[in-house]
Structures are given as C-alpha cells and as structure tokens.
Image 1 (cartoon, one colour):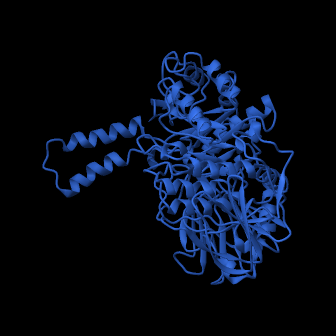
Image 2: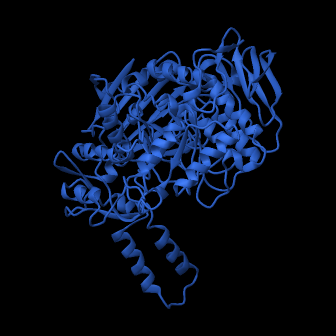
Image 3: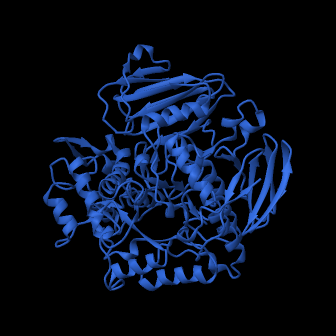
Length: 633
C-alpha cells in the first residue's frame, strides 16, 4: 500500500512514474511540522532498524548517525561524512511496525536517524514543498518491491558490460590501451572493457579526441572491438569555454548553460579551465546534450561514464577573485595562526562552495530556478539525457552508461559507481554495505573501484577485493593518476588473478539472469540477511554478509593478513570455493563457522535445494558459452 502526501508546490523530479492520488496531510502517519523548513519527526523502538539512503557511509543499518541528501564531490569516504555523490531519499523502518518512506525533494535534506535523540527520527528539508510516499508492508523486501514498482524498472546494460573492466586515470595514448589488452590476453586474464579517462580528450574538452595521441580514432575503436574490447570514455559535466569549440558555441548561442541572476552564463573552473554548466533541467538543453554523444558513438563507442556531475566546481570565477582579494589584503603582513587559518579557509572554501551553488540558475519552462533548490537532480538529469537519447536512437540495452551523481529515477536509464574510494581494507566492507542500499533505490547496475581509486594497493588487497567484485554487476578496476599500478598483471605471477577473474566469467550466466529477474520483478540482487531471516536475532545484526539472489549468500574477506573469517549461516548451506575451473564443496549446518579461503578462491554459500549455473571460463563475454552450462549442487 502506497500513500502520497504533498506539501506546497513541489518540483517534478521525475522519480515516480506511477500516478498516485494525493491524500490529505491530516492523515499522514508521521509527525509533520511546517515552519521555515518542513520537518518530519517520529519515534521508533530501541531495537528498530533503518535501511536505505542508497550511497552512504557507515552500516547497512543507518540508525545512529546524521546523513545528508546533497550530491557531493567527496573524495574522502570516511565515517564522519554525511553525504557522498548520490541523493537517494528512501528509507525502510524495520521493527514491529514496518514501513517505507520516500521524500521526493531535490534540495538538501538532513536525516537525523536517532543521533540527537536515541529513539527519534528527525528529517529536515531545506524548503517547504515536497511529496512524501508512505509505504506499508508485511516485510522489508515487499516494501522495497512496492517502492520500486512506482519508480519504474531498473536499467539493463548490454551483456558485455558484465565482463571484467580495467581503468586508470593515466592511460593517455593509443599504445597504453593496446598494452593493457595484450597484457591481459598474454597472461590469461579475462577482459571486456578498457576505460578512457580525461587524458584521451583534446585539452579535456567533452566529445573531443586528441588526434596527436589517436590519429585514426575510429580505426582504433574498430580494432579494439575486433579483439572483443569495448572502449569506455569519460564525459564530464562542464563544457570548456573556447572560441571555435562547437559544443560550447552552440550551447552558449542557444542559451543552454546555467545562468547568473543577470542572465549571463555562470562560469566556473574544472579540468579544462573555465566552463559552462549545461542546464540539464531544461528539457531542450537535455536533449541537445544527449545528442552530443553522437560525436563518439558515430566512431563506434558504445559505452560512457559520466563524471564530475554533482556538479563538481573547482572554483567559480567570482569566488576565485574574492579569494585572491583576501590574499592580496594580507600580503606582506605579519600573519599569526588566525591569519594563516584565514588564508587556508579562503583557498579551501573556493572548491564546491555553497555560495556558488546558491548563485546560479536553471531555465525551467521560462522560469529561473535557483540551483540549490534542485541541486540533487543535476547529475541524474545529465545521465538521463544520455540514456534517453541512446534508447531513442539505438534501442534498449545497446549502450553502457553509468554516472557518479544520481537521484532516484536515473536508475531507469543508467547505473552508478561509488566514486573515489581508497585502497583501504575498510573500503571493501564499505563497498559491500552500499550494495543493498542502492539496490533498494533501483540502482542494480553498480559497483566500486576495485582495488581502490586513491592511495596504493597491495597484491592481497586487490585479490580480496576482486573476490567481492566477482558478484557485483559492474566489475571495474580503477585507480588515480600517480598511484601504484594495479592491473592484475603488475604483481608478478598472474595465476591467482586469473583464477579469480575466471570465476567471474563462469558466474556471468547466473549474475546476468539474476540481474534481469531483479529488474523485471522490482527486486534486490543484494539484501541484508535480516530481510530474509527477520526472526533470527543474529542475522539481523550481520553486516558483513549479504544474500545474493534467491539462491546464495556472499561473505568476502576484508581484513589484511587473514586466511579466513567467521561466518554465520542462518540455515544449512553448502560452502563452495571457486578457483579457475576448480570447485570445492562442503556441507555446513546452520550456525557460526570459521572458513579458510586462499587468495585465489572465491567463497560462496548456496542454499540447500538451489542450483547455480556455471559456464566454462572465457577471456571475454563474446567467447562465453552460455548454452552448455554445468550446475553446482
């Protein structure tokens, strides 16, 4: 049962596609007050759990912290953070009373989930116009399904997008990509995609290719495809301001960039220098931007990743000028500690400044709307622009597209990845914990940068992370410029990496079919154990294991120098260790067990009476035999 309640005149976020009659707010079952801001306040029992909020730090159970819905260019995914790249305003409260709540509101929301008061939930909106969807159900999985039903089916990417993918900020010239391809092939390491970060562009300009580095780009793309490798270029939100650059000149001429209050283009700095920000909330601008992808798709490119679309702002022209003036004012003076902090704050405050987000506007049906009031839609609508255009031009499931920033609704046309994580053991666990939360919000095609984007990976960290990545729909290894090389072939003997990556390809028929079913049935691929075993007190507290599909449970190792781990089985299961073509099976009873897992083994737990299909290993999805399968158990 879904009930919709409305306050004010909310902006149409396009998140909910089913028409639902609006109920009287007098019947709203949660405490709602309207002052300067709208506030929802209600109490829950001491053992109640709170799930959801999609991409966020900390646990699967979100109780006990303050979160914010505010799409943020946040590179440090530490426990003190309140927001990351996505705004996923859906929670499920699980106790004797079970209900879901979606707050359809595109500006900032503060979610005080029993932090200030131990049994009180307080949700504060930075405004007074919103739609609330209240969902009652008998169990958590059913509530999620009902929510997913009203927001629409999840995006399904091409089959090859379930293969292994290699990325690096630093692959610059044609030879770099060929070397990655050949090193994987020569070391029996499967691979389907190689990513092109900002280095491939002509001076970081969207929809361009550096012809000095790629003299015949179409021939290069065709050659990679002939070798069953898909090239996936990055597209950033900012369009470089440059005379003679057709994308900028056309967008400026048509008024498709975000504006200052006086109607001039809002200008800020990102990778290429001064850019205009396309007005993705303007439907004409959105369609125009989507058509720009033709510049690369016409050359054979069939996948893209959208980045920097919160939007990330290194500086605004006005903000940088003000900061420089502050520095000039203290130049040559005797600077004490407070003066030094003032210098630091002036410079650090330039990036992603809240003042900047409050100072530019969108043209929506002829009306100027302040960006801060619709901020959380920006990246989602950028990616929707591409996804809608691809679907119209090429048909469904023809292009790979995923994004860093997102809002519920974008799940219908794209996937997401979890952004700039670190090569930390704790981020394996953070990766695991995000999976069910984003699935709840419709994002099924998802994954983290395996091995970690920032810092320097170790061999064992990468192997352990890959054993989790084996199960995530997006399985991409990605790192930052200047960090330790982390392609699998960089660590000497590749046999252990080959064993793990081969397991991914053996499992692709199962992962892909489970993914499709979950999209079609509005279900979650990954679920907390408590969703399946609500009366099991131990299962309710387990946060380092997940249910996968209707058949399996996964429990990766996420600590350094550990040869195994403790797992809890909520029912009798078969413990399976997969390595290359080798399979080891051990029957285990319900309860707590210690399992040993070698670095080249992928642990999996299968329910009694369930079968898992396995394919023969392959070096890419084009060579994968999906007809002649064997079955586990």
